[in-house]
Length: 496
Image 1 (cartoon, rainbow, N blue to C red):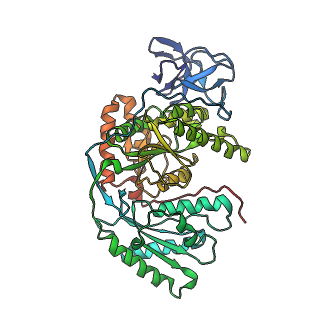
Image 2 (cartoon, one colour; image 1 turned 90 degrees about the vertical axis):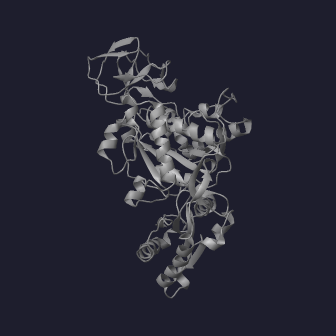
Image 3 (cartoon, rainbow, N blue to C red; image 1 turned 180 degrees about the vertical axis):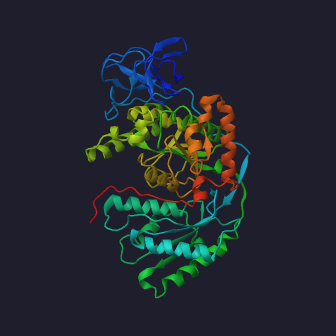
């Protein structure tokens, strides 16, 4: 009926709705529910005095805002977050952490000229500004009708966005970096840059941020200079199509697989089913095969950052994690906001009560892996293993930053359910079986069976096999089945 995550916890998670007066047993503890406890929410295992810490995952998720009796419901009404506090940190490395290993196992991927391996072979249409969104969409539609998908070509993706015009300073540089990094992603066998001609963010301003660039797989159109932009676009997209259709999947080491692990629409089960399972998979992919997995959602590290810092591979990386947390807190403070605004309405309905509660569940996606590096916003990954990407909790902006870092597949864990899609195959993992059954068209995998008796070992193997099938194109992820692809770029500056 209830699940205690860590032996030190003074709360447990209700596995189903508990009515007032119902007798509850948790190990050797017997108590009576003092309130109605919704499914996924927390019940106090013992009396917690006002001001005392509330412990979940073996860590503090806030303090009691009032005296909470044993059997009481713990939620936003009686839990006080401390997530906005500025803290000082000491380098105290964990004794055991999983570092990238090596194996001879492979997957069938697309080997690019720069040595990286893609899981798909798309042609992207992208621009420096929003001014060409309508044309890009029209070009992609026309091209799809004229140049059909083949066994080695996965389609045209018009990656529209709302940035690039009226920006300045670091805000504009961020946009340029993200666009440049997306062009370099190994999933994109061809890139078509669409520029209007009068925007500040022409391709010549994006080009300096591109390090690995296959000129033969790139085309560009300047709309204001064309008499027949549609004819010219089809000519150039046709050239890319001929090149891309000649690509073939070849065996690539699993160490070349780069996965973005993210969660959205989380609930009280995220940290004990979906994210926990993702953590086990991360340990396997990184520890056994040397693959790369990255996580972002920096505000959803607040309250759990000390755990990530203890897993830094060395002192230099520890300092990078400290800077990551500090810089994001500075970003929040600059706008007079609070990290406590991060848990959404849906998160709270699902049982998450504070940013610390959410964060401690969120970081489960990294397992016990060593943090190998911190990737600034818009930059590309350099290290194999677990990386932290500077990005917000906002799903679209954060995952776009992960794809810009080089991720060629997204594993997205959700407890409330969301149809959100990204510019990469997006495998959706449901944290509870009710969601999986209700929204089958949105979901790819049911992690909720973990609370029904399935073992982590069984589910990890099942998920691993699905990931490899998706990486090799033998399985189409939910966003691909629906034809949904999106990007979002962070705005942090004035609009002129």
